[in-house]
Image (cartoon, rainbow, N blue to C red; front, side):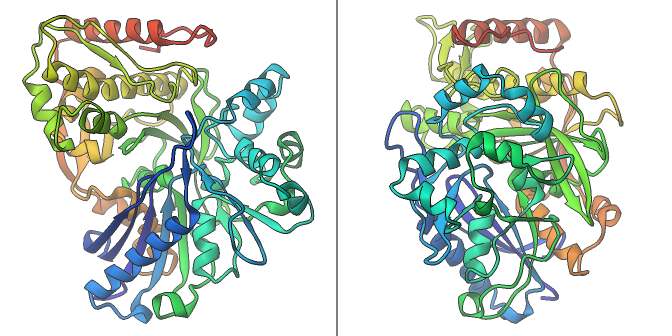
Length: 505
């Protein structure tokens, strides 16, 4: 195997390692699930030790199974769940508390206070984000305020903050490197995406000592080498990107106007806008798509909080299916005469509504509603939410060519779901031959950084389509269904949301 690249893909419910023998070939995959903790309603936590242990075990596993000599690995690329917040002691390397996961809503009240005090315009101008518990800044402040001695230790310079990538780099390098990349930094609410640096005024606003923050490097920068005792050699770490940015790269969405949607626990739609940040009029996020060679490219992004987790609810909460793969065939058997809508606001609604107090609801139930109709409503909910984001992005950004939507992630393997998505978008949907686009994006960053993988142009030529789903639904039926969805969302929004459910057409 010539010049293999090791990709670490650390997600919300599992850690994975993939060994690539080239840009189009996966030699091996190892995956290990780990538990999430829900200590209180709205709280979601991870054990930092489990994150590290499962990551290390899977990396060792793919090397062992492929009999790859560690010193033969050309480089490591890391991609990760974003916004999840770790704080640890610089001397001991021990976390001060469990990591607060991106889904966690415990800082909602703090965010409401900041908005009431008029802080959001400054936050949005500097970071491209809105004030929301989703992002890292209020999570850091909460830990400093609620862990005994943490604030004093942080102000004395003894504590470090990092997102998942940063925590892994720290451990992989034996505590020698405290660094992150620009895509992950851009998700903290502390990073000025135009100046490409931490913002002192925002750190003061959120009461986060700047001494806690990691160095921000290019996404294909030098993040040190692994401690030889961990994997058997000092392997360079040369690619780092948050999971959605990595998936965008893995889908070869390099040109302005290109779009991708990734379906995991949540779902994320990203539209590349190029060298200038685009301000959304639809409460979408402006974020860093990648930074390479000191050049920053930007994207618009929308988040769907519940995608794969909605299917998990069908399986684990309702017991309607035994595995996720059963959802599509079950939905295909639903009675088309029944208009059943599920709004899966289990932890609130994401873009473009941003209503953390909304809670899930089902509309249109009749005595004849059964498992098929509920399965269809669950899968369609993800499609409708993707449509809301697709329409909002096209309204916000008209530059570049209007392209098809490239899809990846667990739900993308369902032909029924992807066909319904194309129908409701009234646009083609492309599924790639390599579904592991998130890990592929991290691998590409590392591979091209060390000169063993092609540049953007060459990599884009290698992207291949597995299947294109063309719209088949008539416009009258589509408009009727979408109108029903909007009405369901309107009834689900909390009294405090103050927002209309009239998403752009």
